[in-house]
Length: 237
Image 1 (cartoon, one colour):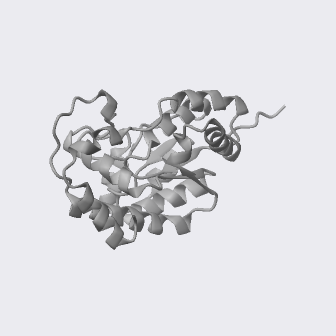
Image 2 (cartoon, rainbow, N blue to C red):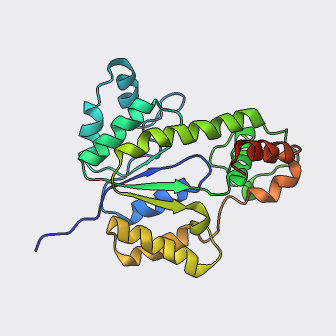
């Protein structure tokens, strides 16, 4: 009998969306080989496929992308730091090799940007503030955060036309304290990727603690109102 495999996946997301947790959980369920998260990241702290992006910047040749994705490696990718044309080549290579795409979004833009600003201040990208000893924070760099927000949206707009099979997942569903809401989201993911239903237990365990809980340090951020007003002006509040 022919073995039915699940789909290889590519998670497209932004910072502070619980993408690392989702990626790790799905990689334990899938039979395909995992790639390092943000595997094309270059300097500093280059990741395993950094050479692909660095070479692409020189010659624009996507052949290495097609070769790597032909192995059906599992990828989480933040498009923001990369050229639009590279992201488009990555999307086309994934399409050619039969990937399915997860677009992970955090609907609460304010909370995401506060979380990002706090993590950047503490110089720890994947920090969980529950384990961080924080007594004082500087004001958020609001213009920088708004610029990042605009760039994130532009990067996705450049990628989306090249994708066919996309499932949008909300961070708020993944970390919901409502068990039915959380499980409904997990089942959608498993069905979309044709992963076994018993993978729900691994997803549930991964998200048992909820999200980053940045709200526990909001009182230490002196200019939340400035960010909120900027988002209202931006139309993203």
